[in-house]
Length: 253
Ligand code: MN3
Image (tube, rainbow, N blue to C red; front, side, top):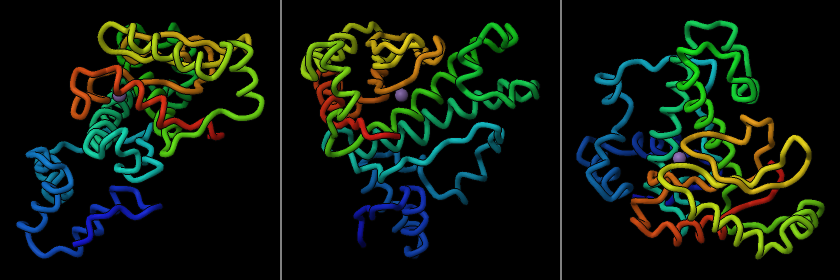
């Protein structure tokens, strides 16, 4: 059986494709066990099995974007199992919980993530924390997937010049990002962003807080929640941060 991921297929499509080609449960199980290399495979059984036990998720207005590459595309920097769990479980949970929180508020359902996060005071107090955490999680991860690539790409043109002017050099910028990511206690993000004043900055954010809460524009973030790296890197956050700074893209997105 061909276990290779084909370019331009989302892994979700691939799973279904491979399942259709399979005959019977034993082969399905072995496919998932090979794919995930662990007992976690049972969480990824086909939707027909899942549908019997899982409650229907709240639908819309926010939806989980597909990964723009196969889940193994970032190996060896970020492994496929981590990518699948991170996207299909963690990111999906932020989307579902955001939709759930705003379900009773039709006015909020019309707002963008930038509008929700940029003015949390306008969100009713009883759901403000849920919106902050889950709209933040949705926005941060949606941006993250688009900025990872393998091989990584260095900044070019105007942005490269601005990085040199603001941080001294690209290597100095990397040092600042590393320092920021390593200094976060617990879960959070190191963000490289552009403030409302147009200036570039690097800053740590706890939990799923986002520069969007300050009206800033996201450029590149390092997710230092343990769910982003623990399967592969265990406690070696510095190795993971180095990998992120190797596997990143400043391509327009
Ligand atoms: Mn994450």
